[in-house]
Image (cartoon, rainbow, N blue to C red; front, side):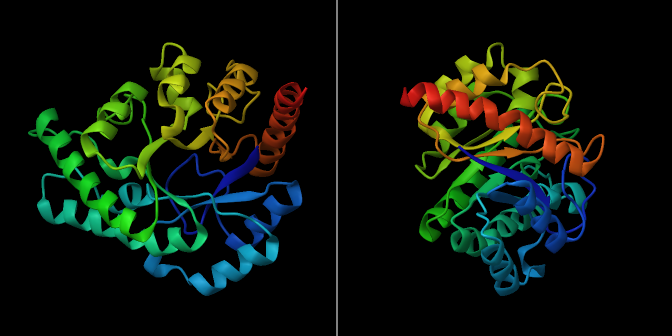
Length: 277
């Protein structure tokens, strides 16, 4: 199983962006720690020098399994479900602008809070219609580019639009695109899913990417989640992608990154050892 961490390519207000700041330094630190991938959080791809970024990633021997897009919501307010149609269209165009970058790195494009939140005066039904329409548009463009999109069910305290795996699977059916799946995050699942393992089994091949954080949003091993059981079930679904750390940089970013690696590697070695045995 391949391990990665979230690294922001641009400054952000998002507290759980574990590695933020100088990109070259952070990617080098990840490599030195022993990670094989870097999930890149990118607000605006037009501000990214792709040849330089590609050369850096290649030099360090890192994969880019996924591209996070939530900063467009956090920092700019772009949303698929904004009442203003120009904002909705700008959000759609922003996701489409990620596709060449994602195609280059063979990365999944994450649909997080750019889906938006329900605003006063808008009905849930209307917001969901806007969301479905935007996702159909983006999924078609992504399919043409050979890219997969992964929507993240997010807990109820951050949005009321797609909180659970079951709701995410219903949305997949409504969008109707094979390249549209889910990103599952253990922090959000701990809040919303009665039994995390059962929810993983519900998704199976529609799990396109996977985030880990413990129940307190610190690195795995800092809270009460049963990661041996969770990861064993994840692997049993056939998932073979990256396990990507997205958690608070506490007590500090370097300690959090090292603890994540030290905690998860023995668990995964044991799971794979039992499978091969």
